[in-house]
Amino acid sequence: MRIYLDCYPCFVRQAIEAARLTGADEAGQLAVLHCVLEALQHVEPGSTPPEMGGHIHRLIRAQTGNSDPYREVKARNTEEALAVYPRLKQLVSKATDPFDRALRLAIAGNIIDCGVSGEYDLWTSIERVLGQRWGIDDSGPLKEALKSAPLALYLADNAGETVFDRLLIEQLHPVPVTYAVKSGPVLNDATRQDALAAGLDRVAHVVSTGCDEPGTILERCSQEFRRLYDKAEVIIAKGQGNYETLSTGGKRLFFLLQVKCPVIARDIGVPTGSIVVKRG
Amino acid sequence: MRIYLDCYPCFVRQAIEAARLTGADEAGQLAVLHCVLEALQHVEPGSTPPEMGGHIHRLIRAQTGNSDPYREVKARNTEEALAVYPRLKQLVSKATDPFDRALRLAIAGNIIDCGVSGEYDLWTSIERVLGQRWGIDDSGPLKEALKSAPLALYLADNAGETVFDRLLIEQLHPVPVTYAVKSGPVLNDATRQDALAAGLDRVAHVVSTGCDEPGTILERCSQEFRRLYDKAEVIIAKGQGNYETLSTGGKRLFFLLQVKCPVIARDIGVPTGSIVVKRG
Image (cartoon, rainbow over all chains, first blue to last red; front, side, top):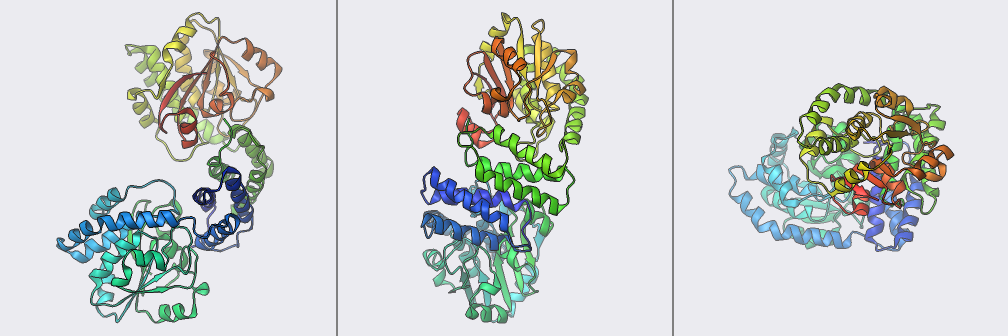
């Protein structure tokens, strides 16, 4: 999905929030903002929001000398999610359809997103998503595809959300899962460190995509990851960033997300706030 | 009130919306956006949001050759407000305290604002504001000040909102009211044409401030208006723009507004969504 004009205010907001998280004073924050306003005048035509997002967050890290502005936010989000994990695990085990419930919880966790505007309450999101009608429901085909899959590739999104992914991965048993995280910090996207903190190594083989943009930009991923991607028979892609970068993918792809911005809503064809399992 | 970093995403959003309203194609909209991103790198330190807003909207009008992008929006908002005017008039006449009700309605009409983000429903705003607790309530001092005032100066905000101002002005009788509008189009702020379309000339003496920024920037107002401002014993200043530009004014000033953005909320000290009558 290409960048729309409506993405620009969001990039500016993200830049300010990231600059604040680095602890820079107001002059430092303004310097970051100027740098991003300049960059926004040179957006590559046809590029995706995560490509530009990656570029902007790289600029911010370079400008402030802070290699991971979201480090504390990510640690806190992971802790908070781990704190509710036992309760969520129980919700899944008591469900008539544990797969459906785990799938919904994985999507509920997608509310943990510093890329979009507005505040959220994690437990409100969980309760909403558990009872919500699907905006797009390809959960049947996903379940079917998983039956015969020798392996599932799971593309992670954000730290904290990882704990919710873990719940779903546990339901995929006995299908082995490879969990792919970003190669380095960008926004609040999960890195290897964040995945390990959430215990993902207990349920999946954790690998890096080789790219540190807030999505999966195949041409910037490692050879090793590309091979994995090419041969995977089922790919679960979490969140808006993966949808934005992989929206031309094939039928092996299943996007799991909450639609959190009007630009994505228009592109995917369901209202903001919708929950989606969409086959590629 | 000075520009805060959080004002920047709002300026970018406004630029995109205004560019769209001019009917420019996407390339034209992008050209406007680039022009505004450039301007945002040169914000005068200490300047107020309406100063920058005025500058940005001047750039957009020059760039697109459209002298009033909000013309149709303003006409529609005025028509919609006039359509509910008889119903509102009845609400005031049936009230136990007609002054309080008219004051609340004038503030309810302040929801008509293209400067802030998000959609609104006019009637929802009316019903909410009629029953809402005041965020700041200096309505008593305002009523008291009006008792002995030989004249009230009323600083208008937006087109359509004008109709709600008319209801309040009718309750101020027999105090004569001078209603001050912008000297030319900027955002959806009311000009003389917009005020006349709303029938303000039937209840007040309509004058121009001499300035076409979305607020009242005294040093850019006409000599004639400045004299009027200096001698006025009661000044009713509608909306965020007037609050942002006149926030250092004296006790003659009464700000009437809905708090529609977090930056104003922080500055004025009440939550977003609050209704306010605040003495200067």
